[in-house]
Length: 472
Image (tube, rainbow, N blue to C red; front, side, top):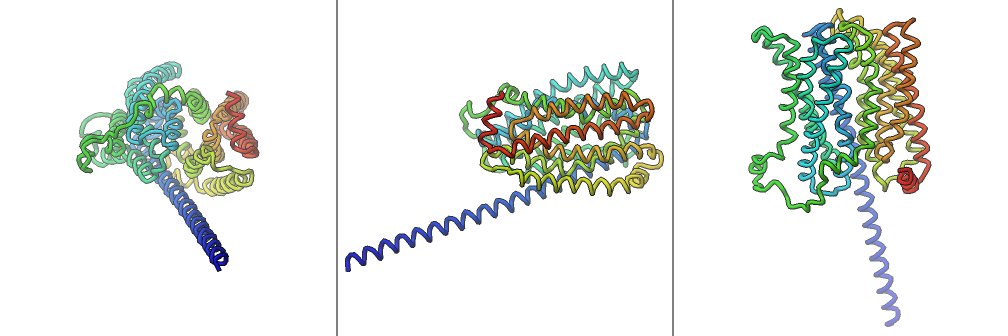
């Protein structure tokens, strides 16, 4: 009886442990399902926010084009070319990727990391403003547009404030706080068009006697300071009093918070990647500024955002491909990579065909008949933007894998191809050779990047990481 009782007790314990294991497995499965659903919600919210921001940019571009006309639009676009189009992200020197990585790995207190990110952003923004001023003067002198130098120099003042916003938001992005990340970047984006709309409605130029070009440049800079307020609100002393917390800085060991020097050193590979990427993606505009008149540049500046809608969804997807690449616990298989890239490519192809059918009517409707000359540029920029969007999502994975140099080499090759193409095609085709070259260059990068991704995902993550470290 004793033996049978012990046996029953053992069986009962095994049954209890089995039930406990099953319950833990069920809970783990439920938790994984919740996380998956949460990631899907974050992806949808981020894509929706990115589309909303792009909608804001479209409205902003339409208002500015309506106010300034083709020539004025060309002047404003030329003034902000280096500070915004080329150096905005290049000047961050890889800060976004590094700060995002620190936040994702939870190496230090998020609030302290936000302060460190703000200091870094202001530093890089100031350095970038000086570099943008020098390059703008050089470009405008070489293209005999010296009268735009004061406008370009004034516009450079926005860079420290936007860099602070971008670096602080990287903490929220890395920590997975997508609600605050999406809200702050939307509020930051809407500040400029909202203030321009207010100035337009009130006839501020007529009231003050200041030209519209100067007013828009001034509003452009001021809007960055106004838009930054929601991002830094919880870092201000009075915000802690509102929450009933007297001390907003929690005690953290000094070595836990990276210094600006450390962040800059770690960001160097990403800085080079961003430099080559931005130069490649904006090379067509640089060629237009060099080869076209101010009015023709105005047409091109309208065509670029009209076609850029095709980059919105893949750009938002890049946030998640970066995290997938950085997560060593998650193995991206060739099958997963093929499905994601196949779905993205199909979406881009369908969207390109759809917008090609209606782009003429859209430009005439929203910008007016005086911008009809932008339509041929836009038709060639559509496929270029579609490939560009695909590459932004794909490149995010490689950056997450700490392999930004692949993007550097592919874009470097594409820049060479674009320059050769324009040199050959400009004679017979004229300015339309520039967006045609953009298509060819994007296609070259596409082949290199996709090949590199399939080579990477065919290896186990720990093996390919080891190989990458060995290369360094």
